[in-house]
Length: 200
Image (cartoon, rainbow, N blue to C red):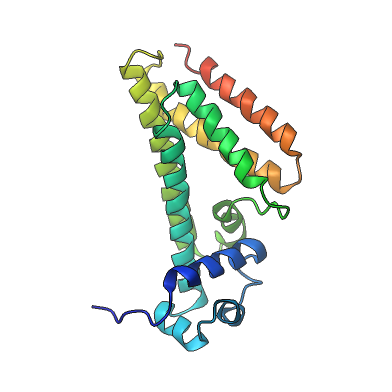
């Protein structure tokens, strides 16, 4: 059994996530995380071995939260499939435009910065994207089973992947400063296009 943490780990991970997200991996040092979190350098190295070890802990937690968001908004929506998709994309737009920094998505940012150097980042991100796609595909399958929509079985998974791809595209457009009104327009259009993809 590992030794219990001598610090509030959730607070530390919140601080580290905010720094990695705003500054990127390279511009975030263990010293800065220690200063902002109030946790000593030695405690950080003892708990996570390295900056990379701490980052991967933060990264996996963030990715799990993104899967939870998709599940809550898509699987938990009581309306039609199309309404669930529009609601999900609207939620994505509201999230990524809620702060003036327009930081985008920590997962997507980190793929761009770190994928070539750290294979674990690719593994976690790929698994996360697949999990998100599976959540949407399960909602499609549920709607097919109930008779709400008519989608051939071989198009269920691609439709799930399409919805996730659109959400990631909206986040990236947000990062380059596309106005919120334009993002909402694209989200609404993409939600309606999901209906077209359901035609057998």
